[in-house]
Length: 273
Image 1 (cartoon, rainbow, N blue to C red):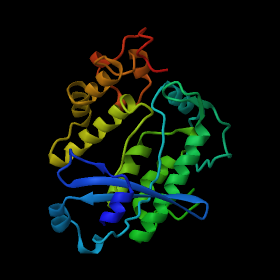
Image 2 (cartoon, helix red, strand yellow):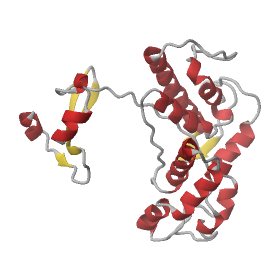
Image 3 (tube, rainbow, N blue to C red):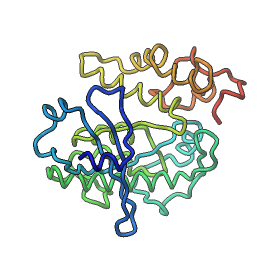
């Protein structure tokens, strides 16, 4: 209502045809800070596009989950050292940890931490899937939890643990969220380079639904001629991604940018470490 809107310091969303403004409120509950985002729609949008059961300030709960992986030479090295058979390899068990490093120079990141985050995310997603669509269980010889029938392939990647964190974790995690009516966001620390590779891969994969079946080619075209290079230009002043040819050799094949938009090998101001 108007009173609530006045108390929230609303932010006007002038670039949207449907959203009028946004506001945020927080409250403490049981030692946890809960955040509520208030979305005020244009009247026409509210009247014609919002289901009746969601009108009148009804709260819509979100269930966020976070899947992580490395896509650079450090992850490649970790995969090489820890490669081998698959298993649940829960954090603290199995092979000793080989340190990974933050994608953009922020310090050491233990790959066991990524394993822990991925297991936590999977358990939340798996629980939600059973709640909203109880369709039985997937068969998995090493599963320590009852895997939802739609999440068996994702579990196969997650259960590799720190031995081999692969990009399928992000792909299948996003697909699973979308299949349950949710959305997915791909993001790295800077939001330009690895994000650009992930976003263009999603876009190219989406084109398969329109009769195309050339994901690698479409992703390369989007990386070379799409909007992601403009994001890099706004950030660092150059029309290139922050990977050089040597770094690109160790990236997953579907996440490699075209050679002509790579950073110079010895461009110390440009290359990510």
